Length: 471
Image (tube, rainbow, N blue to C red):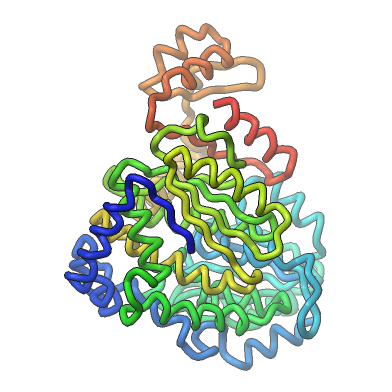
């Protein structure tokens, strides 16, 4: 790992000395919540044990593994949302087009959207009766995968009968959840149980990530082997200046404290989807109390003059990647211009198993540096509660609450909110005028985000990237 922090190098050195003096890494491995926000962090550090745990804990029991391997389905599909589905998405996007190293290969897909057109389009592309579905939810009560299960199970039951339909599903959940009970009642092929002390976004090296790897014909042991090598390298017995997880976390933490809070990720194309996994891990873990890192993935590296002094650039390169040389040239230019850069190279794609543990530890370290709890999710829970209240109100009233748009033009409706209400009135029905006002109002250090509830297609992605480039 090559770390070039320029003027911020002394801050990293000072943090390293502090962590050594206070034995903070050892205390992290000993589950000391006081190094975070002194809340319930100790309850969520089970991911530290996963690399050394037996296969039954991190993949699933032998009978289920054998049943999945023997299942006649030619396609595997994960029904999930958020942390539980992003690592399977990395698996599918990274390995679907590669030949199997042993046995047969099933393509692995992730259905983690509730956009009706996207769901219908996906189900039209596969044959549900020739697919094995993994219903993935730690709590077992997550609305989106449960709704997708209801839809697909009903379709399958109509085609093959209720009993046979159940054998097309596997549950991945925590012990005692409603999903575990549903799996028994509906005759699922089986259930894999995660650990309650491992949060969803830290669950890649658990059954939530490793069982889908097995289902697609990938050898999860090869991924776990790399994690087993990385774990001691990130442990408290490793010298601090040689510890890849600690150095990464302290570098990111020092930079965040200095106002470098936009984490720009560049990756080799073959492992580009790993950027999405890092994005969710880092953003949801650190973004609290007005602190944190904002990851940016999918953005090509530009000229140094394009960026403000709030950026960090992290590059993950796959050995032999023909595109790496051009990225390294741009990173050199960024470093010369004073932008912090961190560069890592992976020998092969299976090294992602080790990278998972490295980034998990680094993210926990950033949380400690910033004094936040990296394992809770207050905004997620608040959003879930608000959604439940809206759905309950809809049930009572027969429809959801109706909100009047601040600006309407043809098929476009814009809900501007109180801060933009005056600008919406001044735009006099012209959405372009309002959007220009929004762009012009951005100040240094601000973030502009696009949250698109659209089907993920190359054409839509390019249009959204085009908007980002303009902004």
